[in-house]
Length: 395
Ligand code: FAD
Ligand code: DHB
Image (cartoon, rainbow, N blue to C red; front, side, top):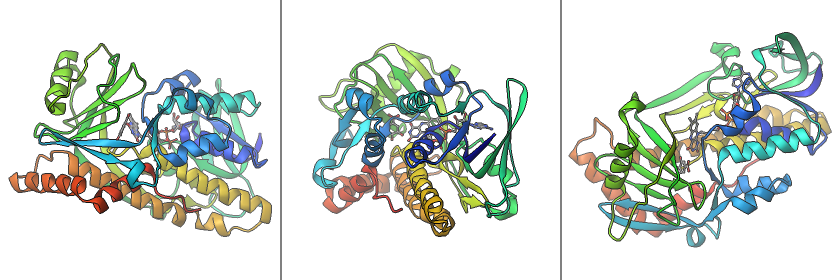
């Protein structure tokens, strides 16, 4: 088999890249080790930046998003029992975010690609990448995998490593060529999906002495809520009643009632910041979680993956049109400028809103002062708003 760009992973990064290339007449093939149903049902992120929403529309894939997405023009920060609105409409030039689950994005992109006749090989096994060390496209890179037990080889000009944090592309690059920047946080998030109408019109980020809590949603009927927990917490220790009890305490405020309902799904996610530099080696371009992880506070992971592949698609289109490698060679540096700003924002939101076990009373007062400042100063709220709705994309 032969294609121009071989894509490993049918998550948001791989799927968006395939569409961006397809509309410019560049051929790609996606290989994915999970089943279509698994990737379409995997519950993850839910907040789309304006730029991600705009891209869905540009690709002609905005119909369901327009139908069921919830446009939000702000968030609430809650601490010391009081609630403060960060008004994006006012502070971020009218921009907003849209609540639309990651797996709905994945469904839209997968269906459109398969309907167009372009391939995604699902449930492949033993994916590996080869012959990618030299940058020249006179020789081909290879993706090897098994389809229903049969070995396949895909020859390609370039490999897009869109295979997430636990994928094979990043570990296939010689370790000496990469520098890793890493930080683990001493807590995780316990997240639930609940058949409970959201108790707020917009998201509530709550700082509480018992730990952070977040009220989010997926639809007018379905709530998505999170509480800070121990990183190695056993979900078995969290029966539904205990989760609601903890949410009631951490989200409590004057004139606020948290509506409860049956919990449909629950899980625990660890929190880390991670960046690998550079994001390119020879013919392999890493994008999305394969290259970086942010802690979820601020909802940036999915949006950052989408930003990477817009840079990559732009560079590949330029290469195939002009033969010049200038933008391809600049791919890593271009992406990393945004990656580090988003890392900073996600780390800052996380540090401001969570309780750290090593912190003392001074740190707690400092966190409250920071929240007071952010909600009281127009320039500080504006900085939060500008980052939350998404920084401009630099191609
Ligand atoms: P992924 O979505 O991970 O896609 C990678 C794809 O590659 C997967 O489909 C995987 O199956 C496939 N793959 C892996 N290995 C191979 C292989 N060897 N061969 C072929 N295919 C392979 N972000 C937020 O902003 N808010 C959240 O609430 C949030 N919650 C999250 C919860 C969890 C449990 C996780 C893991 C992440 C969460 N994130 C969240 C982060 C966000 O979902 C990711 O940043 C986003 O999925 C990145 O997209 P991606 O395409 O780069 O990677
Ligand atoms: C959601 C996740 C986030 O990390 C966040 O900051 C806001 C919302 C969500 O899953 O809805």
